[in-house]
Length: 290
DNA sequence: AGTGTCGCCTGAATGC
DNA sequence: TGCATTCAGGCGACAC
Image: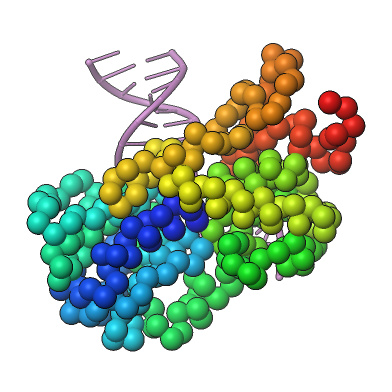
């Protein structure tokens, strides 16, 4: 599922259940996800109290009062389901980890494709972990603006669409929001990242922030797997301008899609890219005619 | 160093 | 109905 908005929605659902609550037990129903579950995972968590939850890029972080913490990545199909105190829980297919809370609540990590992962971190040094050390700025934080993006992209020969998926450039942006943000900023996905102008970088950072914030407001995007911690779908997929809309008209377009073919789909670095060839031209020709 | 390709794994949708 | 193929929100190990 999960790009920044979906991960943030899951974190928000998780926070009231975890924070200030004691983990009384951890059930491991398999020994690995994409990577092995640390052998001392259970031991590090059990009887510790959660002091804070956080998010960095597409990772959820949970910090404990024993100085440790853990990071959780949902991969493509990871879900977290919360069972409130008293609610009956029966194990379902692909349930891999269960966290039992002192309140009686249970938190279940389910992941059909097992591309997700969990690992332990130290509360004080987690940012030095390899997953986070080279990670780019948080797009919704104050260290992300046009100038910073411009510097990050300098000299890059990859197309801008591929560069946006690189978590070292900006954290948390995935395939959906990269497509949507490029559409909103009217930048061609095939334009080489290093060729973007400062003005384009300004537009792009603003568009990334805007798209991510809107998606969070709508509860994220549900294509196939994504659910929040209550099992509900997100709504942002109804607001896509281009993503998964091949052949359809993009918002505000009055061109004849029988002639233009509508939204186009191409493959870049093995991933689908959706864009409007009229509004997102490699050179600024848009606006000359209407 | 930076970039593109492949593989990890399952399930849903599509094609024959 | 059934079987094979294709594709999917991510990421890291490789080869070049």
